[in-house]
Image (tube, rainbow, N blue to C red; front, side):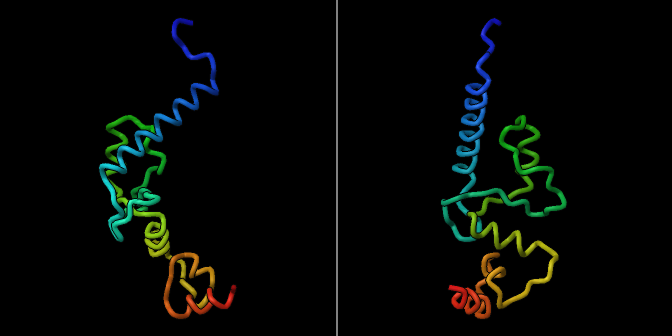
Length: 117
């Protein structure tokens, strides 16, 4: 068996830790959020969703990963949600709690949210 990891759960945990560390280092070097400047809950946002291959890039080989990351910007969770919803072709219906949850803060959506409590 010469050095191979026979404990599969342990090997998977090490891989998860390795990917998480690679992700952490990348966001530390490429943050903060390009919209609001936050360092909290950073995520990848594909500027053009048509070019997106996948979002699980941090386990990929360096060249492939860098090609995919070049298509992205760093956004915090909240800004990412708003930007992604703005990219969707679906019609937005203002004055609903759904639209508020999707990041809209227009007067109609804020009123709908306040009335839903």
